[in-house]
Amino acid sequence: MRQRLRFTSQSCHTPIQQSAALPETNEVRFPLYICDFKDTAFTKGLFLNYHFNSEQYPTLRHLFKMYICDRSLNGIAITRMQCPPWPKGKKLVHLDLKGAPPRTEYLHQLIELFSRLGVDGLLVEYEDMFPYQGELKLLQATAQTPYSREEILNMQELAKSKGMEVIPLVQTFGHLEFVLKHRPLWGLRELPHCVGTLNPHTEDGYRLVMEMLRQVVELHPGVNTLHIGADEVYMLGEGEQSKQWLVSPERTVQQLFLNHVTKVAQAVKEAWPHINIIMWDDMMRDMSQDTLKASGLVGLVQPMLWDYTPDLDVDRTVSLLEKYHSAGMSELWAASSFKGSTSVYTCVLLTQRHVDNHLQWLKVASSLSAGVKLRGIAITGWQRYDHLSVLCELIPVALPSLAACLETLVHGQFSSEAQSKATEKLGVSTVEVSALERQSPVNSLFPGRRLAEVIVELDVLLNLEDIRFFERNMYVRGWFSLYQRQRKLVHPLITMQIHSQASTFLSLLQQKTEAVRVEMLGLYPESTVQEWIEEHVSPVLFPLQQITDEIMTCMKEIVPQI
Image 1 (cartoon, helix red, strand yellow):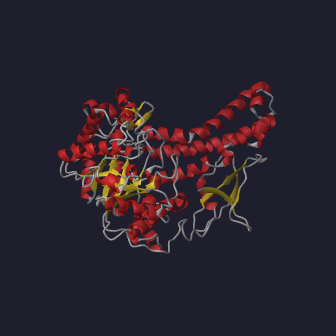
Image 2: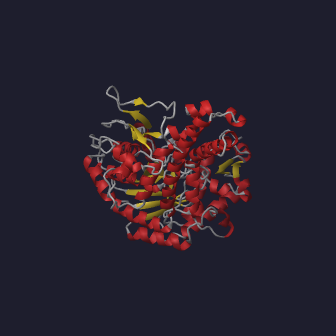
Image 3: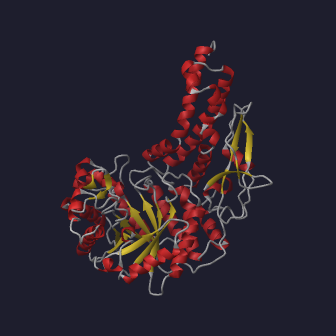
């Protein structure tokens, strides 16, 4: 968790209290954030004062140069207990394209990087960025242009030339928000207000899913593996048709789920006998071995067990994998996370959290019975929690995390050697993205480094309490309250002080936001840039802009010649 810390001789963990007053001069205080990692050797912070010149605003680079920190571990805990390296099997990287889809040129740069990092395959989740045709054309994105057929084929060719398998992921039951949000398809929902779950009783819904799969498979010539999703099928059994089906006492929601997934998987095998089928496991976790054996899924699908938490329950995860294996599902996968699993709105991630997740997965792999084999691991990088949620961390911010996680798997620990390999491959001196701005050399090897840097800089500004909660400032609450604004009962001298500091903060935010905009436009479509700024910057910038405008309106009525 990010914490605001002040280093004192008594304690490294004393939180800085919110400023109660504005300084008498144009002094702006910048509490810098660092990460207080579990098991790391340092948790030191520094509270800086910087005097602004009205004609030349300082950059965060100047502030970072003033920041003193312990760099011995680069902010990441070095693990001393080693597990065996990740067992033989594929290491897939998940590309979640339902938010912030990279421009084609950047996507190719990422594939080149993935190859250098040792990635064996791509798990590609297109959603509305796939160029669906015919009756499915309404599924295409409208905020930005979907990838063309040629672009998707070129992406596959590049990946294959680097020795990477491309596995498309198509949701077929839950998380169908991008499908069921469209008015003509509302009738296919399990419940009117549950936009993500398909009604499993309608033939129209089944035909829709199979047509989606057909178009995706046909645009992936030579595909050997297909992921059919089927996670988080919320509210299943709550629809009217499901309730009627469940009236019979021998029927259960588990069977309702299994019937639909088995029907889809069997149809895939009939159409493309050579294709291996992966599905998420979470809807099967509470099922007994007997239920799984009788489901018809044994020998048909390969469960992918996902857990993205840094404190993954090793014993429980091992038990689940062995249950699936005992039920006859001998082909098993794991799924970890290098980004997109901290919170729904995270902007800058903590690499340590994701390294810890992979350390737990190493423990799982080393604890399995001899007969239980994992076919591989998908290192997920969620861009949204679902189609209708806000953007998570962008890919450039998460590439150091990905490199660290991959090296952790290779070495069986996040050792000094693993860290050295990760930083060497990226051309940086740390895998903690929050330190990139002050440590990365100019010749960094990973694409999007500059965008990652300016996002970190802007994130520091956006999370300063003096900026984010400016209206809670004592002077604003004491001399420019809503009551005072409405009645123009304000003190001109103090009010202009408030205006001066708000204007300073506005200029800093606008300057850094423009830097982010320029860098982001080179890698992402305009719609992504606009969404990211409106989600992360506007909620902080607009109140500052409003208060400066209202101050000037008041001043014109109470001060001559304003």
